[in-house]
Amino acid sequence: MKLIHRYQASGGSKQLLNIECNFEPTCSEYTKQCIAKYGAIKGWKLGLARIKRCNQPDLIEKIYDEVP
Image (tube, rainbow, N blue to C red):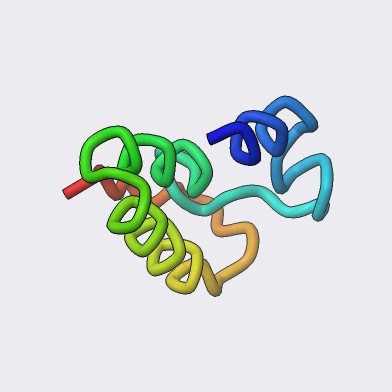
């Protein structure tokens, strides 16, 4: 969780990679929520699967995808 907090505090993908997350909540926030709900192992797996789905840079409309 500390790694995610640091990433978010530094500005996330917009600041570090010059791209904006296509999802709402952002992939980092989604991963935090998954970890809180399912624990570290399953939470990280769900978060990484979400990041892999993020393959259309800078969509105009956000894709709402809540934690299962």
